[in-house]
Amino acid sequence: MNVKNPEKTCKRVTIVGLGRSGIGAARLLADQGLQVTVTDCRKAEDIKNELDLLPDGISFVAGGHPASVFEGVDMVVVSPGVPLHIDPLKICRTKGIAVIGELELAYRSTDLPFMAITGTNGKSTVTSLAGEMLNASGISAFVGGNIGNSLCEGLTEIKQEEKHGSQSTKWIVAEVSSFQLETTELFSPRLAAVLNISPDHLDRYSSMDEYISAKTNIFKQQNKHDYLVLNADDPAVVSLAGLAPGEVVWFSSNSKVEAEGKKGVFLRDDELCFHLDSRQGKIIHQESIRIKGSHNLENAMAAACLALLAGVAPGVVAGVLRDFPGLEHRVEFVGSLGGVTYINDSKATNIGATEKSLQSFSEPVILIAGGFDKKTDFSLLLPEVSKRVKTLILIGETAEKLAAVLGSASPVIFADDMDDAVQKADLAAVKGDIVLLSPACASFDMFADFEDRGRKFKEAVRRLPQKKKMFIKAREVAI
Image (cartoon, rainbow, N blue to C red):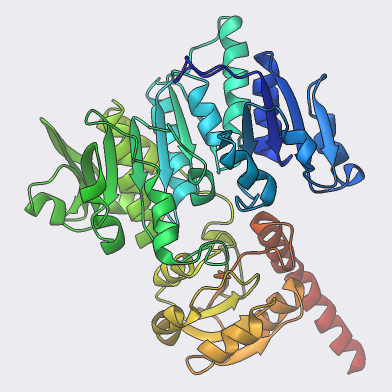
């Protein structure tokens, strides 16, 4: 099993958590002939669909993580959402049993090079863009990880395709979260990127330093032949450069990279330009990039830098940037009604993402925010809310907290649910306004996930014309 460390043998594995990563890990390990047990704290009847996806021969224990499922195992694979401090995992570590995540398992199970992307915001967009650029150039890439596709599931499919003579995959392009990076040991991507760092997940981490430390695991095991792509405009990211074992390459939305004689991708006279080793030149004019906003300019530069380092031609990079429409729930245009524009940025689950989203608009914004509390400091939003937000519509468990912190910067309206929030935003809006869902919080207090939240926002927006017609008809009858 352990391609990267063949001297270690592994026969019995317990997987903790039956989400997408757990199912993918189970399939990969079973395919390699290992004895696999899966344990999940949920009841079996609540995860029947997930259980149906497990291969034959895998044992399953529901309703908790009893000590018996960890006895005699050689390795434990833990899903990203499972806290690492639970007693069974502590005991395993004291016994010298490796406790790793699906990211580490995937890395150990293949010789394919990894391109790995982390950061507080923009990971999915950069990962998707980089994958598109590789595939558009004929360099076949599998895109997965935190973006939604299990890396281990992908490796299983790649091996099946290769058996049938299909095109051989050349790269694994992985979006990786801090949770996934906590459980790495040997993980060493050929190309790594840290896009930005702002407060997030402080309900899980004791401090920002602990959160940043988890992020640095993306490059700690690299060697001098590897590359680390960093954001030259983010001070927290810049501070990581001295820790990098590999070569640092930069991206910047100003000419800082060029002025300081550094390698990377940068903006010069509204043109994306690059200087990498002996190669240099222009990529694309900023206005020709389809995805808009300052945050997406950074995303475009980061993806371009990674793709160029992987051997993609500048012309191919430019073509993808012209055509790439962006991802759902990320500053997504939903529609326009009566001159009011509705934007779905449900993926903005932290303060930094909402800041970037607000900075994308010069028009007055009616902001729908609130949700599950990740213990972050909402006062960091005050400058952008004061400058850009005409009305705050607040939902979820953080609504009162947000009102207390931001109420001095903008009028506040409380809403019971998403449908109520959209209707109240519609009443507050006038022609030329932006109604923006950008919650600055996780979604788990009211929704299954950020995608569910975004879908419900879009459904509520699409119901508005019907509701307005009903109101007009009712008024006509009353007259």
